[in-house]
Length: 563
Ligand code: HC1
Ligand code: SF4
Image (cartoon, rainbow, N blue to C red):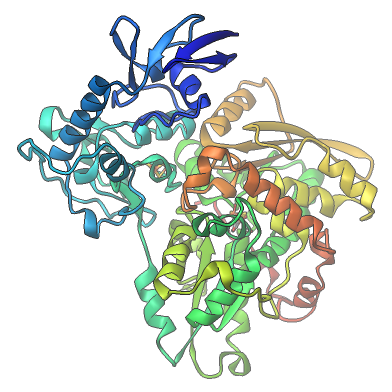
């Protein structure tokens, strides 16, 4: 603990890792383009430079706070310096701001405006780079890259993928995959976490809004949507609603008004996944084969496992993800002329995740050769569509989702937070469904934002070891420990994004800095408000097994990862 004097005001500090954090604690929003509290410090942009009482300047992100330190954050010299940094960045930047996908949300644009940059007094020294749209998940536009390195550190520190790095030197320097390969030929898992930290339009979502708009306008097409758990607690961010508020009812309303014919809940698909995956877990426990069982609903993790640990592919659950199960079941349902009314069906999944755009293209995401889902729209694309439609989201009434796939259990809804799949399976395997049983599961350590959690699953008085992991670097760490014999588990849940889908690469990014806590709270609150706590007690799911699914369970609900 100690005290610093910041712009003449005494400020106490305790465990803040750098001077920048103490300055922010003093309510001063010092600009930076390359500092993220969860990534390693790079100190490249120099925007957070401050001055001490002797006039010495230093980058506040890479300086430790010291007792008695005196710091000035806004002297005329510093303001001039920051403006010059921004002018130089803009001189090497594609400045088609009005048509840029990031316009209005670009951090560089915002800072340039804030620092009074109205002209760029330097010669444009931008080198033209090709845009890489090869990934179904993200688009790389190096012409908008400012070399802050946030994406590189995210892909390396947090995701352990290292798909991108700095390449070339001087004015041609940029960030790209090694040997300038296209992203879809690398180990990139499509998680979109690089896009979450990119301050400009250099990495953006590969959008699918146009074909969906077209289908909505076509009277001969019935457009159906499913909404993933994590979407409902993030859309409100874009409309100044309280962070983490569950706005499912409003989403259903605006989608209907935009022209979606039916709006369903992916939590229903999650209930199917829980039932099938729990059964598979019990079968593997009985046979002793392919343990631990790894969950497979996260496409980023599945792709990482296939690229980096093909030896573990047989451990992945063969149950389809909730999105895919839902897609397959819906396709089957709409085969009936009484349900399709003679129209073409367009199946849209609204997801917090960019990797889901790749998942729908995989061979095992097809039934009888036909893709189960036509398009994935991320939460951010949904927000853009709502804004484009002119609907005033804040004011619209709530509506309930449609039958027969409109109800998910609480267990299905909590899938969106890390630990949710495991908690849902624990509920399924619990003998009864009393409040006290649910409470014991809730307090087992399965909830919370830690990257690796260990839990005990109890089934018929026997105890099994489970782990819950989020963030691929954490998954890698755990795999190393398992392979070296340091630990072992029976069941392992992996989500590629830290804290699970609530922090997915397709979510609006403002609240990411808050760690997604409000979003997790929103999902757990939605569970509290749901009477059905166990997936197998969802009456709509039960009637599906007794009707449409009979004899087709394996065809529609499972796939095979072992290529
Ligand atoms: Fe997820 Fe899932 S929880 S993967 O995180 O299993 O995207 O929300 O829809 O499929 O249900 C994402 C979220 C989502 C699937 C479910
Ligand atoms: Fe790396 Fe994920 Fe970005 Fe691919 S999408 S480059 S894996 S952070």
